Image (cartoon, rainbow, N blue to C red; front, top):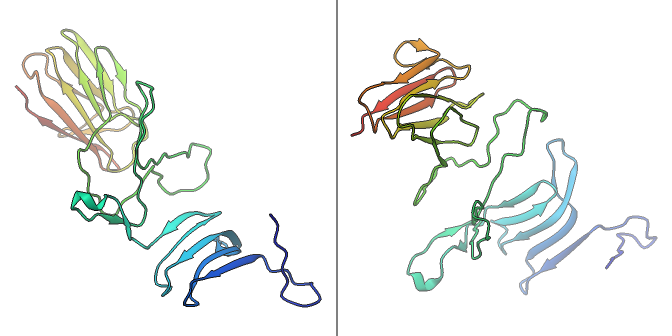
Length: 234
């Protein structure tokens, strides 16, 4: 459907918007080619919904999705709990892939080495996070392994001999990695281009050849070094 409207009788100034008002005459919905603007001030088309007093809004534009209303209820009234948010995702279906993941809200960092810009990028950002039932990506290995950018916990299952676990390349400040010695075999941690502070600065750090089964190395990258800490196990 195409709607053609003009601001002047000569039909030389087209109006590229629709506005909807509630019964009290308050503007509550706008469909416009200039709902929002980009970083350089160029207009972006979209849909904008306002509360009647114009104090809160939600919009979908060429820039993305925004909402500051915060009145969407995440749980039904029968729960007896009141959890509200500006954006709520409720997962009701799961896929059938044994390695698949279903999530109410999912964020994926799609930037790569060819993406311009100097800012650090993440699949999600929260200035304050409350998490229930927190989970980490975990992998079990019995031989040498190179951690990738998504690995968090590595459980080493080598019964004997020595295996090397290389930490993720190009880590961002705040990156956490945990490596557990689940069996008697020795583990060597490779900083993979970054030094480990263990104490002292080293490229490699071993988790003893005798004793120490159940120990867990907890490593935090501070922006300069991997801080090595060991949690004793059995």
